[in-house]
Image (cartoon, rainbow, N blue to C red; front, side):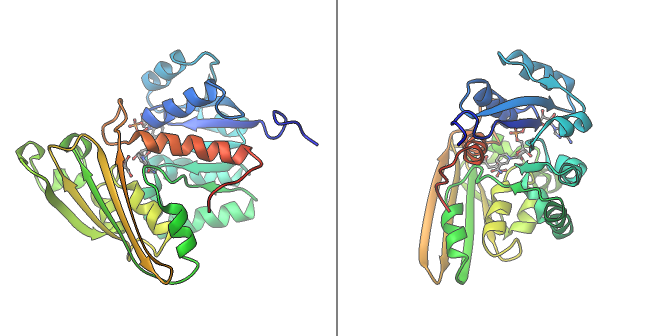
Length: 278
Ligand SMILES: NC(=O)C1=CN([C@@H]2O[C@H](COP(=O)(O)OP(=O)(O)OC[C@H]3O[C@@H](n4cnc5c(N)ncnc54)[C@H](O)[C@@H]3O)[C@@H](O)[C@H]2O)C=CC1
Ligand SMILES: O=C([O-])CC(=O)C(=O)O
């Protein structure tokens, strides 16, 4: 029988050295996960270098090609573009892939290709719960019929800055004096409008009834100091509601701290014999 430390020494490669990548690397460095951080990559050399400087056990800063070779699992915490650029290659080379930029998967063609490639090459795709709770309940509920999944997200103007919806509609985020509804639509439309703000809508879609049926509302609130996600699910099981008041990451006000913690928890789960939750 393997001892606990021998159980699985997972070799991890990280694409994206921003707020989530940094927290994951620090957790591995602090030995919170029984894993080895073998390599990191960022299209910004500055971000990659800054991250290396914050770690005691420095991984190598490699090209994506070499990073994939060295890793058992590649964690994408960069952007939807990175999922499109590197996702298939990771899986084709028989490696596992964790995706944080889940919005990329609202493209049904890309999703199908990734899933088929993973099946062919015996790889796995992991989608952490990210900045929300309730994915476990939704997965369980989806075994029977589901009538409604709704996400209501409220962020401070700083947490919505730069989103295509804001730019394309010439919205002055500084002009709001109270909580205001900015957007209402399905998850597919929400991801196109706010690709770096509501990845959680894509995760809910995958866990539940798809991006066309999942409803999303986005509020801006100048008084909000937390990123708030409220989830309502109704179906044959009954109904649940869930409200998460997230502390934003210090390095990126769009991203909640919980998103990085969920990636760390998922990596821990992969390496541990006891599996809790749906
Ligand atoms: N699933 C979820 O619940 C959540 C997902 N996210 C998503 O996770 C991703 C990472 O979030 P953060 O760490 O907060 O972002 P960040 O902006 O702090 O860091 C992203 C890093 O990735 C790099 N990058 C971007 N595109 C790249 C590419 N094509 N190739 C290589 N490097 C690239 C950037 O230079 C940057 O250093 C984002 O796509 C974000 O929208 C964020 C919050 C919650
Ligand atoms: O971190 C959050 O609160 C949610 C987020 O940005 C996303 O889902 O893209």
